[in-house]
Image (tube, rainbow, N blue to C red; front, side, top):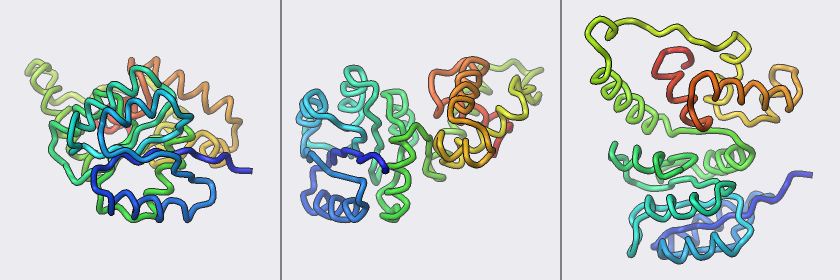
Length: 222
């Protein structure tokens, strides 16, 4: 039986909240157990409710979604936060991930796609809106170029990962969770978890999103 995913929608427009809730609850394992109009309300609810995933808008009436995300993540690392916004400014995208966001989606996303992303994120997957991925990668490349000396600017770094680790990381980038990866390449979930641990250690990153972004930037995966 598929585990029920408890959701909170943080959005200051009532009609948008109603629409999201109606669309998401068409899926039997998604349950919206809380709604918040204000960032501080979302923080308080996150501390008192058994939440799995939060859909977070950025433009809130009090504190913004980035500040709310950071506060929630500092107290509740296990809660996954998906930024759902119409904002695609590169600074906001980067600040959201620095604050601890697990995914960043634009509001023109189709309901079925959002449902799939929620399920993947809840199970440990990683996902970036294609438009957002380009923003993040371009920004990181620019920062990387500033820090590299002239001799190394055009050199492609050799990947420290094994072929199997590359395969697992590519599947993470494609949006698959641990269970799906295990089935896809015929290994156990425990082995998938071990590969991901090795990937994070070898790339000196803290989470899957950072691993995917770095590998895409270096050209190791697509």
